[in-house]
Image (cartoon, rainbow, N blue to C red; front, top):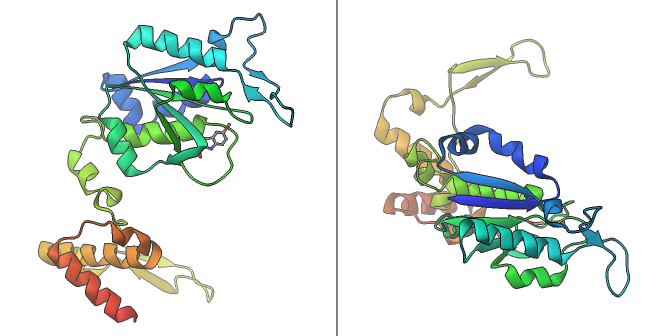
Length: 254
Ligand code: JBZ
């Protein structure tokens, strides 16, 4: 997949992309990301990207022409038609299903906004307007990175162990089960003094009984989801054993 990110803060976008699985995918050429400076597509000496809003009011608005010129350059580079993603609070919620849809595209453009937003005419070239959540941010750079990370993980060869992507909580519609690693016991200092509490890994995980482990994990994932995100259970894809376990857990609650 090839991705173009258009921003007035190219370093903010480029640096995080060097880390972890996404960084390695870029090194290997599995993923090709070009971070483009919006100011390179201005035509005035001062490389101005913002202006006062028509009709008055506080703050500045991003000028449309640098975006149009950037999109023309990207289209000439990559060949059209482009999938152009705009991150904004007005977008539809970005979900794992949206990530899956976008991961099937050969090419993505991510437009990052700043200030009070874009001149609305930029939306003429936008195919998908997405929001990563209901909170106030300073710009679209972090949302673009969030979307790129979630989409990149779904491209074959980006995450080493394909199975772990398939088994991931949100792909199944459930929260993950609790994980543990060595040591099997740790002593922690409670309020009373030194080493007065021992935190143990659940015995079943040390038992070597893989059937029992699988069942414990299913139950734990369902219990956590029921406790923290019951809304997810509406759409979760459950096998027969999970449906039974969920019934048990729900009866235990009421
Ligand atoms: C987004 C103009 O800068 C912003 C401000 C908030 C914001 C974005 C861009 S993108 N929120 C979101 O994805 O929810």
